[in-house]
Length: 463
Image (cartoon, rainbow, N blue to C red):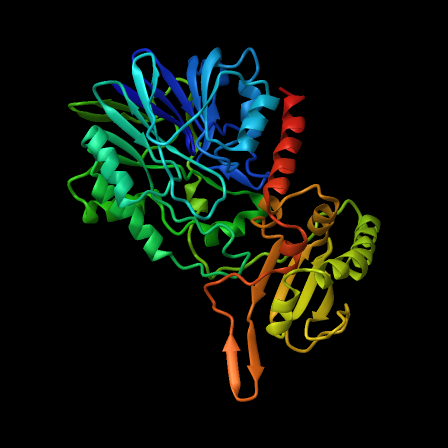
């Protein structure tokens, strides 16, 4: 028998007779740059968590690779055994963070290359997620009798599913991907309708895999406090709706909801789920009603953080000096300049202070020599709005787009077209148009590394 206990989001204990595996531990609020909280909220007694033999990290996203929790687990008095096996993707940043936190016995996983631990065979499964530039993996757990798959966020193909079935036949239990997350769509003025192709692919994966039992996996968080309006724009499918759709799509597969504190007992004879039976974790409050997909509701305006009015005024002056100087120079020398000119781009940058008031700066890229003007160009077909506090942190290199880009404190839209003699040309709506701030402060490996190493310093000292 194998049993799985959901702690929160994608964090689970998977236990056999001899071995305990912990996956993607995220145990504390707040998470992901202090933007999100676990939902449902949980009571977690850290001292009652059983000793852990294997720690599996599926990928680098902060709702799976939480430095605060990893710093806690690196402590001598944590439930992680001193000789625990650490499974990690071949990702330099993940590996460097683990080493900075003094983790040992790290094994880099390889797709479909089995790993034997005591009475278990662990088989990493690949992901075809083209949206990220770093690797991720799911994990099959087999005790010789039953087989469990944790899909996490992985994207799989018919060939991958066929290979899983070839290796293990019909799986006994699957924590399946169900939510086509729209996080960031609001910010970037993308559609907030359900992405039907992506959502239907989750149903098709379940239908092709046909495990004996499915529970929804890896999507138990929400935006917190003043960012709560984004909950109406980011989560188009609930676990209950997925299970209802799956019952119609693939009725031969048994299903159930699975919440923090629930335990699934998996045998060849079937699956039993005991609700709220864990000794160390339980649902504190079922606050999932705060996640309701209504992408027509009131939107909170951008308001910057500031200590007082003097600091706000000083921030805006520093920002203006930067825009008139380094920022203009950066755009003038950008490799995107010819593209901005070709598309006759008129650009506005709007920066909001702590009162919600704003200042705007405008650039007409048709001009041979770029100038920053405070008066409006007329039309605006490329726009970026951002809180002063966040822009200043980008300028100083003390934040990342993971924070700014999904917090609601940065918003953009583009309506790009070009008119010539008897011609009208528009930039394809399904392609991203280069944004000046993102070109100046690229969301790349270096920015990611700074973000994680900052968190290492923050939490290692407290662990």
